[in-house]
View 1 (spheres, one colour):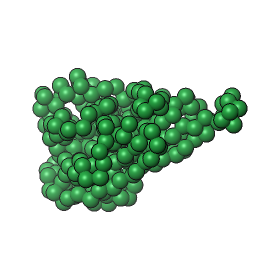
View 2: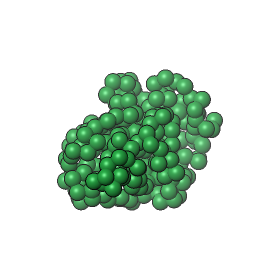
View 3: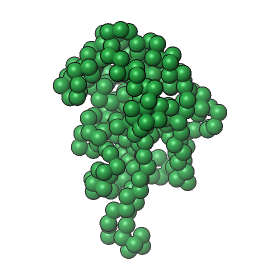
View 4: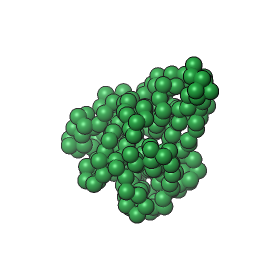
Length: 242
């Protein structure tokens, strides 16, 4: 099973189109997995939801993120700044009913378990304790709650990483170790690893082959869409990947 893994598009259509073009050029995947946050921060939430439904690659999983949750339940207190709350309200006011229905009825809860290529895989937007808002950073991957899985795939932090953790288990044949591979693909539309390119991951679950990809796109085209009432922070950060 060859899978494209992506997260955190955040209404950046130019970035997503660049990723789709790169996939078509380099890979022939069996499926895609989205780890949440199609919407908000960017200006084209409706367009992203429309576009994802036309992609000719099966969507194996389609998780909600914290921004979809905030949109549906209207609870904005978890955002860390007032500008983020203003941004969420702006997005909510500009979403079509069709987009709202898609988020409510099609997107999945942000923690799913799958078997892919004979591997036990946990999909998260956040963490196992807080699937919407938790941050599964490299410093937190040794939590034994994850040891039953072969892969843990997560989003939300907008920073890509791949880490193998070898948990202690009672299995002499495997030298009493159990490997769990943690992967975060980074963000398509709003990376925060000081690389402004659109980022995603290709995984071959049979061989373990994993490619981290960063694709250039027209950042200025997306920046030009931001209206004056939105804090310039959200458009300026695209240029720096922060």
